[in-house]
Length: 171
Image 1: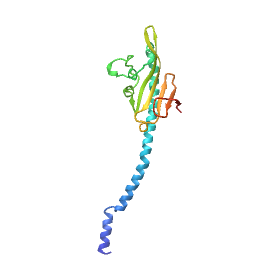
Image 2: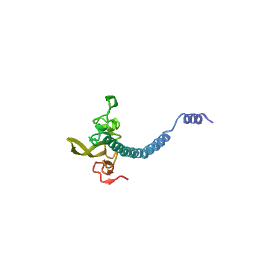
Image 3: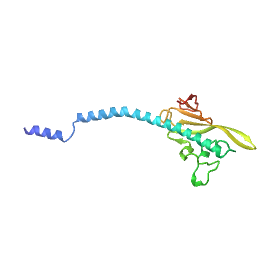
């Protein structure tokens, strides 16, 4: 072998050619273009599943609240279902039945509300007899595509537009 061939072989062993680097970068770009939309769809689905489970958790807390505080009926706010154990014993305004993040009304890309409360007066005491819990995406299309509603009877419905106009049964 002559000197020129030995230098070329030695140079080739020390690194990659520009063409090899461009091919690797093109492959990485293609993989990213495939993976990023899939990852976003997975996160949307995870957030939607979390929203369904969270409003079911709120419904269970509402049922327990109405059994614990029968004169009040249901709670008409998430803060009444939440609370901090360091603040003392549970009470009708801080029953400590749900976790603080859910009691704030913001969890996993969804915003939660306890609305449409129906009140009746019994012996000069207001009693809440029904409610609706809603979960809507913080950013429709990004954090979730569906809105969810659950009433005091346990009927879970969804809004395909991502709002709280729930008309379709959840499958």
